Length: 504
Image (cartoon, rainbow, N blue to C red; front, side):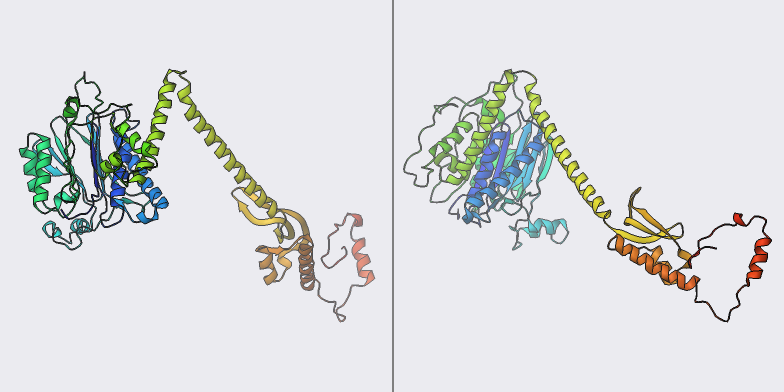
């Protein structure tokens, strides 16, 4: 009753129900909710490619990416966001995806309960025990959202769950405009006491408006019904449309047919799928005049299934008053329709054709892995080649040696080998040099390594071969001759290299 525009959007069909509440405090709240809802309506079908919860989560993430694209093309929409609470039916199971403070309730086997959890600041305080539930309604920050779809988070965290469903149970999806006025006990009373779900929706909305309705209110009620085996697909627009806006206020008054009611609706003069929809009145100045076919394409697609579309999403579709949403959503829908047609055309071809995409993916994977392996081998080879340009002086069998490579190992692979082993015992070196040789002495090149060896040789001589002492006695030739005579075979004496030079 106080908003100048409607930031809510909702869609309900045979298999899909979704409610989105755009962030009214930002420009583009209506754009965010309408774009998100219109990007999900193609899921309203029984032949899903995967489990409902997986498909629903993927499509909501894709819708989030679309919001980022919209902000890129229209920066004035920066900061827009929307809540999403969506339910997708698949056989006897229903998937629920939720983000924000819109809600999902369930009435099953006489038990009424809130299924979704609000992603708000006060709910976090309640979960942490810092706030009582009854205090949340008067908390000054009760409307602060912690998680929404928008252009801020590229991969927002969704609450996902799957439930077994049975005929007769009812689900209620709503924007937080309902909870701003009515308590859960009031909602439960109306849902229990209404035999007709249209009456339940109208009553809840009327009570909200009577209470002042400080926010847009959207209510969707879904009743699970058995699908008759002989049910033929309907190609009809729904008979019941949202109540008109009065007094300059934008109010989403959504009533939701159950699957059984949607199938049983009477024919009306609305165009069937494939027919050209009625032209949009030219009095709408904000209509997508340059590309009216976009809005018509969306209407044609929606006309192929029983549904109700309300709020900003309905405005964008029927009048094109949000051209940017109409444009992007129509482009995506056209791409999907072309893809489905291509799939249908290929069903009569050879059975080997469906295997082509997986084979192509396998070949792409093989090529990518081969390229990565080649790059890794190149890097390893370049690294090994570099190590072979290095030299160092170290110890080999207690001898000073020159090594080519680096002193490290790569697993079982040694990155160096001995180039030259000298006659210098490592034990003959001073303690300092002995330690350095054992730890390896790096050299710039082979010449530098030989210079280091020459320096070590001089150090070893200084220890093993001190300068001769003139006072020291020397053996006389007679003593040497006597020693040689005492040897039976002088030629058999061993020859030993003398570190001081010469032989002995």
